[in-house]
Length: 158
Length: 445
View 1 (spheres, rainbow over the protein chains, first blue to last red):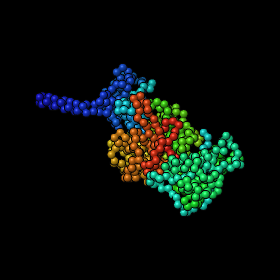
View 2 (view 1 turned 45 degrees about the vertical axis):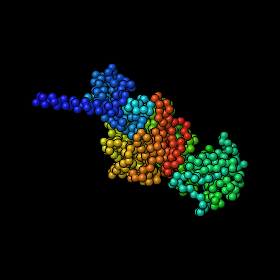
View 3 (view 1 turned 30 degrees about the horizontal axis):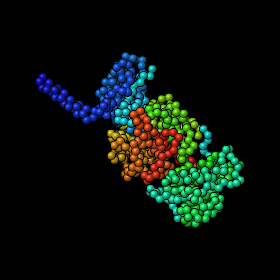
View 4 (view 1 turned 30 degrees about the vertical axis):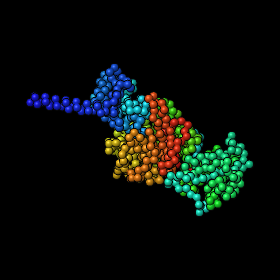
């Protein structure tokens, strides 16, 4: 039994490694992985070790593993600072129509908000605003800039 | 704000000749524009000065605005005035047709004006030089400061007579004026005449404003403002400057447009990551939910009969265009081409939907029939979107953005127009960078 179980675990690990390496060889370029920004160039910090933003793939609002880790740090920070309220700003890159980007930014900000709420932060402490493509953090017209602009940013309001 | 609506009295209409030899077909791209001579309007010597207006030059200035309008259509070729063969006052009485034909003109516009007792009296005639007869004539009285509008109304009448379609010159365009670096743009609502004259700013730039749209029945505007950092749809009366929030929604409202009768605003309301489409009746304030779907539903646009709504949704995965009944029933996806689609806008004629298409990193403005068939892409660019129809449904105005360098340098936003034939692409002249244009209906209708 134990042997079988071990074998199964080893198989899963090997399988996962294969998938990951396939992803990283085909999609990774600089600080972008599978269309999502993974670097730190634009990141600010709510407190030491608590990044303020997470990044998204084109047209997507789903949270990556890295985004979830960032948001868990934000949740811990918010639990420690009970009187602090935040606004989550949702943003899109400039390569879409203005109105659709407003909706997309709202969806991204809410994806982050929902995740914080599952970690025990009251929705009353988190307001949301979408800026669509209106406030790029990086004004360049390049895939790197666009990946940095597809973001939700948690901002302290008090 | 200064009162814009001005009374224009039309007191004389001559009989239009039924048989004319010249006509302009605007359903196809016109590679052979009609040669037309626009004679300067004769200024009556009894004319008096009026509030700093150079009355002496008014006849020439009006004729130049008419020429500029005609030229912008791509359908007419206004001839150089140096070649003109008769004095304006004499030509206006009765042209020597054979002499005008010598300079290859096929149509001639003549006119005269008188400024007296604080009033501007204008009359004009359109002559068919081939058939050697008068085609139409009209006279107006208005305040002298209205002289540009007189030129646009004359242009509209001539366009109508020669093409059989309603004109679009006595109109305005509202848009978002942009300034400052790309990551900190200052945006203001601005309005100008269709030809770029008379630019006025309607907001100060203290808050972000987006997507202004005209009411098709009057000069009201709906737009999105981030006033107090709360993105909401507003209603603005551009005559009085009075503005108000539309509805009492707990979250962001955006993508507003008027219903064709001007009585409702249709828009998106976003809540908890989901955008749906709502209408609000401006008289009764009754709010109605039109879509209820977990996807993004936005950019709604009514058909001109008010029975249908085109909108943008990603319910199939990516952005596509859908059409539904005005109560939200019978939702049908109409775009199936390669690429993704946004910003559907129903033509005022009802036959076409204009849209933005994105494919392989390029942006297209196109038109299709209302069932999605007959897609025609009119123009391709690095970035362009947000088409708005001329009131006669023949021309689209939209905006373009350029690719920026690593610090945002080289970025610009500009307004462009194109005929739905795909011909006659033109850059509109604006005082600042500009985006989100919306074309008004005819002011004098």
